[in-house]
Image (tube, rainbow, N blue to C red; front, side, top):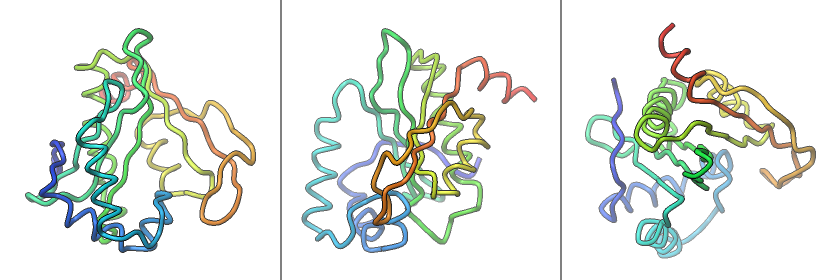
Length: 174
């Protein structure tokens, strides 16, 4: 394994602020562009200080450096579902398999430690990297929300993906 998951702390803010200064990264993951350092730190402080019971965000670390994060949001433990999200902030590391490794780790955690039975993901249709990542992680396309969201200055479709625990486990055994 090249990556590990760990909590994000305020010590990581300088790295996260650097990501927020990368316009291509911000546009790819739908972050607001041109936020000040204070705005970025304030946003992340709120996320880290009170994430709520239904939200888990972990940092993706490689070689001792924070390079991204993964989420399980809108968790409903009674039903056993959550929504998956991921971002590799270090653009120089895109397309090197870190998203797959980090995604597998988070999905394993969700299915085997949190007791989830279903994980969904929503991807803007123009975001071909994220579409490919979801498919490589084993997600299946379940639907399409037509002209549903603003993305990179235009209205676009959103692809709905789903992954069940038994599908994830079966795929890992191949």
